[in-house]
Length: 335
Length: 241
Image (cartoon, rainbow over all chains, first blue to last red; front, side, top):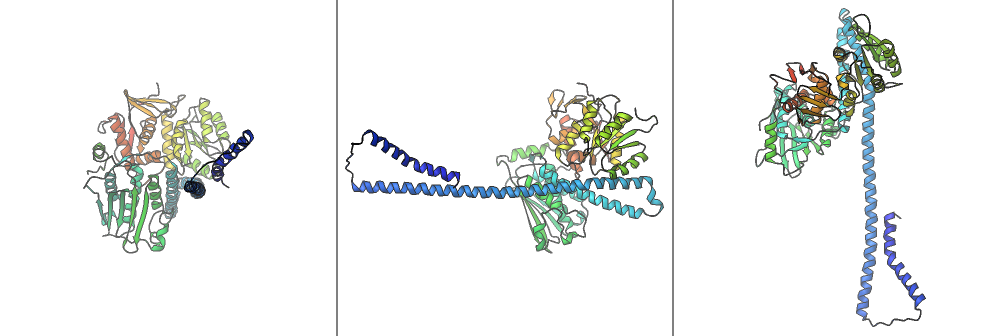
């Protein structure tokens, strides 16, 4: 019996115990006293009914409480298991990161040694050396990406009001630096009517990384002439940001794995990258209490959407205007 | 101090032989006399015996880790320049490395040429027998005053309102004055990792600092832009209260 049920039973039995105690006292003090009352049978029936209802209500309440307690315990167990799984994964990533760092440091120092001595140029091994350097750089990128993931899941992030349209425009400007971007049409849509988008609470740099990753993916998995659209909108659930492309799309059997770290689809094998991008996006959005989703059709394109909560509905136009005036960073967007 | 010839003497402490055996010849060829210590106690012995010009300490070592070596050096009043090789990617790590009086730090796996640049910079900045700026609790640069323990800064009598990242950047710049800092290096300082077009994030924080300081990029009192290269803290820094 749970503790809760035991407590309920005690409470139900308390009146009975009080009655018995009173009876014992009366019997001892005044054993000869008798009480004769006149009561109508209808009132008696009514009282009996009331008593029955009371007992039934007590039993029902007791059962429901026990059920809720059981469900809460099961919920807590599921949550604990999920937290433990996340912790295990984090610990594994940290260990992997840690074990790779020393050998990589040694390899880079060794390569710098050869480079410094000018030993390679003489015997024609410079091509081999360049190849080893490139591979070392590749592993370094992978380690750095893994560190980003573990860092972002654990480190404190800086929350401040962020103007999403300005941020999206800055990402679009920076997109010029993505190889192949000039051959795609990149379109940004931000609503102005009936009111501008509200500010969100977040870490501007991290949100920049997330959106930039999505735009870079859209460019990477599309061909010259394709279109990439970045669309922001608002509804009762908060802010919605979509990055869509008319590119190669993702096969149905791969769509479930795209958010996992190191996931690389068949189409990505011939392209550079570590397969950490979408995992990073997922972590960043989760740290902002948001949600990510993906829709894709092979041969037609892909759309990734990010939902972010808007903290306070009251913060609308005046604050947005003030923030936009205040910013004087390079690549500032006029809205 | 150090050797009698012009070559600076440096103690390199790391328990991974693969690292020391590759870094030592690299530093040697770059003009340093390198002594290797395989653990923390050995590093302390070498410093005691050689009185070197500088020290490179790995954080994770057997028999006294890098932090403990650093603490014991500083407690003994030895203010030789120290570069820490950190490897835990956790956020606090970077700030802590400076709080304990390391002159600079690098996250593994680092570019050996970056280590060379950091090492040369800390040796150049070293003030024999005096604490490095990175060990000072308060610093002044013109009208700017900084309390590094509480992470607060004042311009004349007005306290600056800065984001934590901008404060971290200001702390790094003010403790490394007159040193050319590449955007990539500052990105590493701010985030511990790089990311595509992340240098914009650095530019944004520099802009925030300039706004708070009222610094004109055209005629800077504090932070100068070195076109195509990065930034430099140009004000002279003083650790007297």
